[in-house]
Image (tube, rainbow, N blue to C red; front, side, top):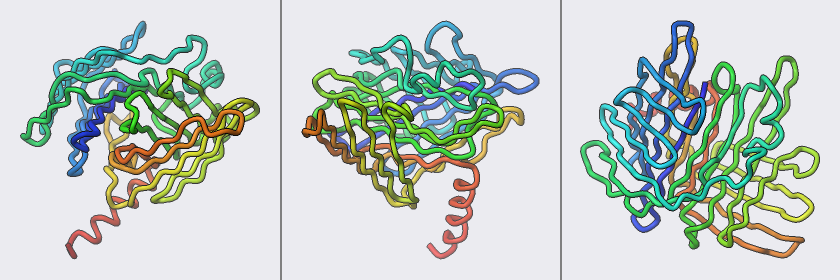
Length: 309
């Protein structure tokens, strides 16, 4: 499985659009998990597309005429949503040796790897959300890639935020259970792009550990290394989450797998050698809690209360 994700944040209008493409491998070939979601309104359009292709030499995901995503353009044409956006002024990941997963990217056969390759950019284009045209020109752009064997881990947590007072700030984190054969452990990685151009990463269990506490409606992270420390507090009501699909690659089908908020509140405090260096709050943050059992439990809960609404 090789997944691509783009996020477009418009602080002025309070709108967010995400686009995702998961290129999955079954016994008879590749297929795709495709989706567009939007905030506010809880909109989601997703599909299982019968084919898919991930570029082996550069960042890019393709699914015939339904999806084309690269470092500079995203085009998607789904049943109830369309997206056509050009990305300029990109702020790419600055380090070549390792990505967001740090040295874990050099460990073979892990179940999941993560790389936030785009930490900023400017969108030019539109989305059609349930028949309504949304102008995305000027939106702040974020992009990431994840990959691994057999789909997603048993459980995970994730977050990303732009829409701070300074448009050059970007924060992203990802964590959960990683495994290779019988070895299992929990790891969280945090990447911060500061307004002054500084980019740093925490999450090495020895040199820059990150502790994480995640509940249904709250995400709390603390991390540090010899120079930087960070505190992240995120919150959003469970009932506001989108229930996003995740693939079962060998079965060629999607299932509910991730509870993702697109308009959460996230406050970040960064310290350098103990002194506050930057702090910011976004009310258009993404916060996610993933896992098949958790997602299905929320589907069931909503079905049970629906007749009472």
